[in-house]
Amino acid sequence: MGAKLTHFSFYRLPAIAWAVLLFLLSSIPSEAMPKLALEISDLIEHFAAYSVFGFLLAHAIIQKAGEVSWKWRFAVVTIGALYGASDELHQTFVPGRFCAFSDFLADCAGVLFGLIVHHLLVRRWWFERKGRNNVS
Image (cartoon, rainbow, N blue to C red; front, side, top):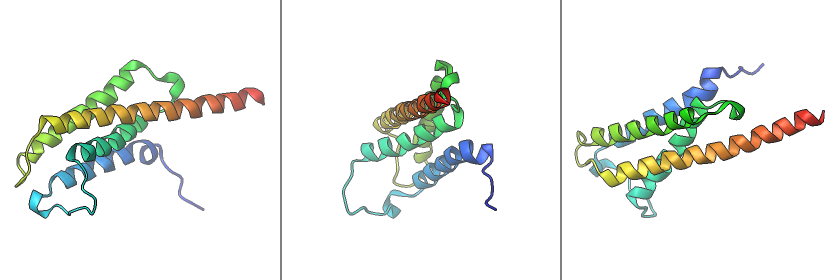
């Protein structure tokens, strides 16, 4: 008797939770940031974090591959870019952190990459599903 996932918790909650996580991470002062064993470029970290965010935003906004229009894709990129900009601005208020245009560009590139990955995976799933339904 497992709990049934609601539409909100399956589609929207992951993107909201990731946005909160991004906000919390960018709220950590630079001297308190944990050091990773492997030195990774700040731009790669931004790109990776916002790739996940872009994927989750696309999952939250675009739910049927057969009904996707460019306005929904544009909404994903716009929301992701605005969130990235607000995150960079937010960091100006955190000790030891700063706003960097290069980080913002990495955020935007990550959102776009996440959207593309989502598009390719959902589109593949959609057409495989459609093909199975046509065979029956």
